[in-house]
Length: 309
Image 1: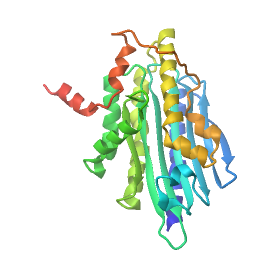
Image 2: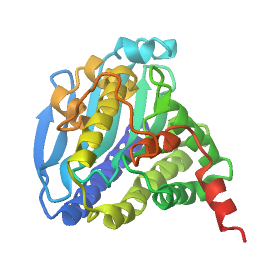
Image 3: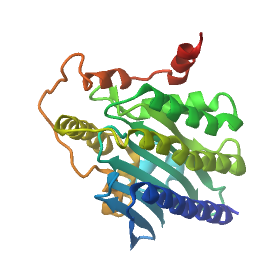
Image 4: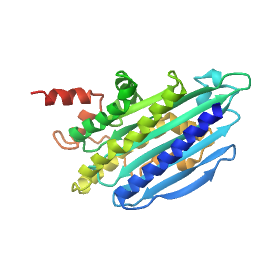
């Protein structure tokens, strides 16, 4: 039973990777190159990367399926019930770093984990979500992003979007900076309370909604002119992206500690970034406007109030 579920999820994830790459390559005009790999301890994956395109300076859509006889310390420290269990972890993750600073960076993933031990019921859950990291944010873009996220959750209950939106805001916070990485989206983990079929359906709803959330924003902003000033600010803010991934991201830690492929795990890093000591934007500048977007906000509530006559 457990492995039938795993096969179903794996089939969906491989298809999702294909669909994401096809749509994103069409938008860029370039091609993803594929790099298949094997993990000595068990499993492997296929990494797909696009670089130097007309739209994406760097982007990646990775599939991985790793398994083994025991879990790394990062997984068992908070979950002692996993000690002594074999495991399978399967997922698709994607990160997109456009060249134009007016087009936001975006990240997402959907994943499934199952741990087994003879004579005991399997422990399993789904996780994932997606988030948006703009440099020159536009309110209507953020509202569109969150409306698609809300609609993806709608059939699963009224509390689902607010719950996973808040979880995303909390998770993607750079605690050492007291700011969010971007404008959020959805984040869920340990999802299993409704049973496998309902949980898997929710994972699919999230994965299938990403292109509807992201591509309209890309099309609105990709032709916005930019110069050296905007590019320098983008590279400075990309430094924050790197800080989060290396300091706070649990997936990065799990991947490295479980013997995953380093090149694929660190695919999420931008191709260029910069750090400037104690730099602050000029008050009232377009760069300073980003600060208002780096704290949790009720984007859809604000939009509804603006639309009310």
